[in-house]
Each structure stands twice: as C-alpha cells, then as structure tokens.
Length: 353
View 1: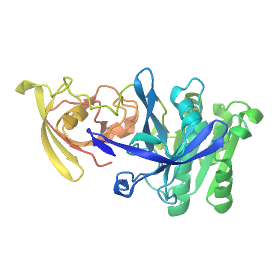
View 2 (view 1 turned 45 degrees about the horizontal axis):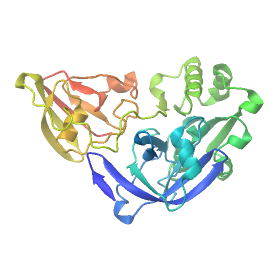
View 3 (view 1 turned 135 degrees about the vertical axis):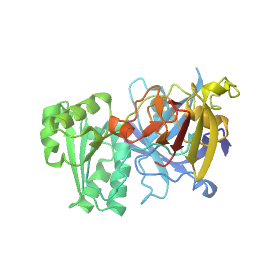
View 4 (view 1 turned 30 degrees about the horizontal axis):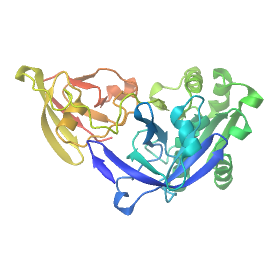
C-alpha cells in the first residue's frame, strides 16, 4: 500500500522482532516484490516510522537501518528504549510479528561514499545501528580497513555484541572494534578518546550517538587536528513536522500567487529530468517542487536530516537555517532544498548526491 503525496508512504508487515538487549529491539520488515525498487538503500540510511499517538494521532520517528543492502535479505531497523521516550518504549513493548507499520522510503546521507576507504566509526549506544550496516557492507563488498570505537554503559548494554565479535573474527585484518565500557572506564572524555584513536585519526570519521558522546568525539578530533571536512555526523532528533501528512503548501493548500518581480527562475535536474519553474523568493525550494508535483526527497523539513541535499550549479541561494551541512560542503555548492531561497534571478539546481 502506498500514497503519493510528494513523499512515498508505504505500509510494511513486521516479519520478525529480535531482542538485541533488554532495551533494544530489531524490527525486520517484509517488503513486497512490487516495492523492492522503492526500498533500495545505502548503508547508513534510515527509515521514518509512523508511531500512533493518542494525543496527536501519530508522531514520526527516524530509526537507522541495521541491515546491509549487500548481505541481508530483509530490511531492518533497530530501536533502543530511551527514558521517557514515547515512541521507542511503545515500539519495544508492543510491536509484534505480523503488525503493519507505516513507513517512508529509506533516506539519509550518513556513511562513506567509498566502501574501499579506511574509516574510523565512532558510536555510542544505539548509534551502532547505522554503523553496523556500514561495517557489514564494507566487509562484504569493500576493501577498506575499519576501526570502530563503541561506547556503552556496561557489557549487558552492548547492542550487536555477538555480531561484532563474529565480524572481527571473520575479518581480523580489516576490522577492529574498540569497546569503551563506562562500568570499567567511566564516561568517555576527549583526551583518553583522542589517545585511543590517534593511530587512526588520518581517516574519515563517522560519529553517531547521544549528544554528549558526539561532543566528546568532536573535541577529540579537534585535539588531533582532524579537519572538519573529515568528520561526518548522524544526529537523532524528534521531528516537529508530520511527513506522513499532505505536504505543507505555500499558503495551506495551493501555491501562493506572487508578483512577477518577486520570483526567480529555477532550473532543477532531478531523477533524470529537468524542470523549469517559477521560484517565489520567499518560498523554500522544496515547497516549490512539491507544489509542482515533483517527487523531491525529504523527511524532516527542519534542516537536520540532510535528505533534501542538492547542488547549486549556477546562481546564488541562501539557507534560512542549516544543521546538516558543514562549511566545506556549503563551499562546494551543496544546499538543503527545505531551507533554500533564491538570491539571483535564475538558479540551476541538481539533485545529484
């Protein structure tokens, strides 16, 4: 089942529920053959799940894919229960085999573009979820060397402990897992983390986990003088927008009629086609595309997920806000369609990421 509302919404059946730890569950989905192309994904991406709510009818939550497109038959996300987390607790306590869950198609840009590269993967808690997808993919189809720094409260809270041990045993020359257990070493702090990963600091860094851990890893990287362009981040946050609803139109239901002097001309390359559109100067590019029936990628509409990243090939634009792109990426011409406004009479945009 699907609905084409500018985003792709589908209902998938839960084929298996795996208890990873006392606080973490993996949901394995059955994807019908007719939707297989829609659910092709890259390691490091996520699914957005619609979680019922008695207060707001539903909430949207993004959960990383722990499966690998290169070695797993079925797509899977892993959810860790968090204190006072409505959605995570409901999922971990109630979802069962055979349940139907509404989801958006895979999104996100976290993970190495080159599976043959050497990388440093830093994770804490459920941050291991996209990291596991990356590890499995790199081991199976890549040739790069991978070092993983994985922080947890204690041994019982290590998600995928057996899987990580098996992969390290299977690929001893290419995979090394460095466990940091708070029960043995205390909370991670910048200097000890920097010393631990110093031999591998010349690689691209990928970090995922709670905010405190991300800050520690960032401080360790700074101490080792790692360029910001080599540090890649996946953030977990709740979505204020409702991506399962109809896309927000520029005046509630229909595009705003704008005086000619207040529009730019947008030439947009997407999915092998080029569209030439009027772009009101105070309307984000994503809204313009959705208003014209163009299936542009997006999830959060809040500048956080990076799903709607695109390239400015010609002309000038500005972003109202930005939480997903670093300065070096912006310097290369990348921008977020959900936040981008035109600043020149004509702009050429390409969704080529």
